[in-house]
Length: 357
Image (cartoon, rainbow, N blue to C red; front, side):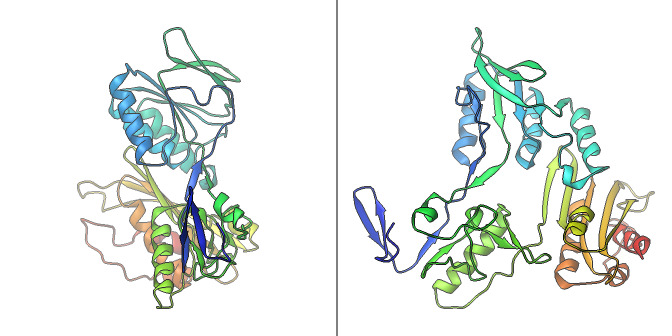
């Protein structure tokens, strides 16, 4: 690429541009161990990866699956493999999945996995892979060897910034492309959007890398509007996410108490367990809900929730409260729509806010 000349090299040719948008995404993080590229070892970052896994399952006699990692993809793929009645084991180098959420969230995720017959091996490093005599894979760990017919590596993602680096574009402290709130890089007429670039965290004000599809969509809209002549800014993110482990919803927004304290807030949290509906109503399920606020100002800083009914919906409400700068007291009196088929008269959000107060 030659930014000053306004051209991108394509093989033997060149493509001129008036504006350039870099949307190179992320690449799977690698273990960098022996045998990592053997047949039967997969990543899952795009459609072609998914098609490759499906084709392998169809062609081979797969009975045992090993998943490395305990992030979103790894945990969600447990359900997919168990749905095919495959013997599934998750290996994780850490102690608990989603450790940033703390207890009881991590323990409940492990319990949900084990209830659905997924073996979880914490504090385990993968040292390498080998092919066995029966054309299966031997997964070598510090605690011994595991046999697998298929291995899925879901240990994270790395921003693809090689093109930006070659062009002299600034890379931010997160390792992703640095941009302003118009999605502009440090070079004129060159933008970056999606998983390859940073966002600004709206609570801390710091650069933040959140490779999620909804964030990429908003960033792309912002860049497109500015290129098209309609000024638009992207205000940033507060780190909202959700995922599903079998029937268990897990969601988070903003900061955890530990994260907030590291950022200098006098953070306090309250954790409650409240039924999603009146207990006598059909389908009522428990929601574990944690609310985080700044003690000095009362400002709502975040929330985490899990349960089988409505956990994501509650976190989305707090996401709006964090964005609007509501206080814990304002949240305790939030005028939410109520009817027994949907929630309690005193929702878990109200209960947690009043407990904090």
